[in-house]
Image: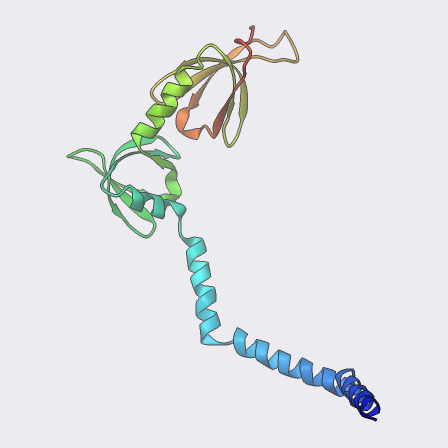
Amino acid sequence: MLFICFKSVVKRIRDILFSNAFGEFIEKHTKEAVEEVLFSDEFREYLLSILEESEESPFKEIAEQYLNQEVVISTTVNMLNGTIILVGEDYLVLQESSETTILLPFDSIIVIYQEEAIYMFNEALREAVGTLVQIITPVDILTGTLMSVGESVAVIRTSSNYSPYIPSEDVTVRLDVITYVRLFESQSETA
C-alpha cells in the first residue's frame, strides 16, 4: 500500500514538474531574477570596474615597479635613458638629465627595461657572432649570419635559400624589438 501511495505522489510530482504552468513559473521568476541582477547598482559597478581595468595600460604597472630607478625606454620613435620619477594614469615622467625631464604617454612606449637586463642579453648575443641565427621580432623573421652586436643593435647578414641570384643583405635590428633569437648548432651560413 505504501508503494502505491509513493507511486501516486511521484506521478503527481512528475505531472507538476513537466506541466506548462510550472515551466511558465520557472521562466517568469528566472527572468525577474536575472533582470534584478543585471539592473542592480552592484552589477553596474562591477562592469564599470572591469572596463576601467581593461583601459589601463600595462606600462603603468611596469613603470611603478621601476619608480626612482634608472631605465631604458624604447618608444615608437627612439630610445630614452633616465630615471622614472613619477607615474600618472596614462603617462610617466622620466628625468633624462639634471636639466631635462620628459613627459611620456604610455601609448608611445614599446618596452621599459633596466640597462643591466639588455647588457646581459647583449653579452649572450655577442657570443653567437659568426653563427647562423634566426632573429624574431613582432613584425619579421630574419635568418642569416649574426655579424655584430652593438649597444642597442645587432647586424645580421641575410641571404636567400631559394635563389643564388639574390645578394646577401646586412640588416640592422634594434635589440629592444627582438622577441627572441634562435641559435642554430651548425657553423655560420655560407654566403
